Image 1: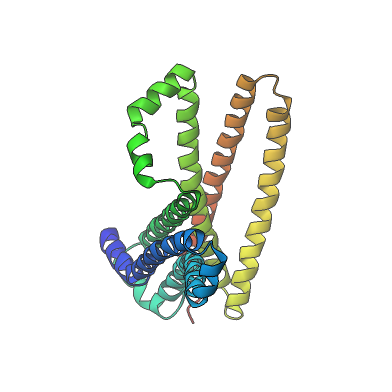
Image 2: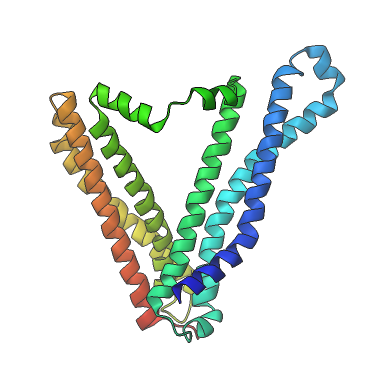
Length: 280
């Protein structure tokens, strides 16, 4: 049943996000062409004066490109929040909770779809901005692809430098940080809304209050824990090897904290939906 929930959720969210992502890609292509024209064809003052209208149009395209990026990022978050709110906490909740599925499946369907769209939006933003930066620097993409080393060549170079294990560890830690941070972000919204909707009145205000309270509590916990570990490890390191081991320990501690936060927020969300949800 989880598969059917995911299919429905991807279909509903894809109707909005896929065209938006397509628009961002088109704007990225137009913006890169506009930036090239502005840097090359409009450099001469006489040409700039002659084609003032075209110059304004090119600038507007570049501005629209950056507005499109911000819009896509904001819409991804808004859609993630609104889908959870309307499907589970509003009138649709009466239907959703009568389906032959568990609360865990309902939450996981929202969580997995939100996670995928967050990652997709983040990768797309990184890609278009990186290509724009390369375009502005005058770097030819063809040369990059031709000269970019293969994975085996990268691995061999890291092995010769004696940092293959360190690089592998950093890659694994980086992936875990991205995954857990994204899950915590989604569950942070879900837990705040679920707690707020346990009450009969002022649900939106209470949801915001719970969201802020969770943010403050987690910030205090993370700051206290991280500062203590860094003082005992990173700041007291005597050489590069000890510094790397201490830094890796700090990252592992952060990963464990994020995993604990995700588990706690998930437990709060499911418990609130099961025991205290007020749809009246």
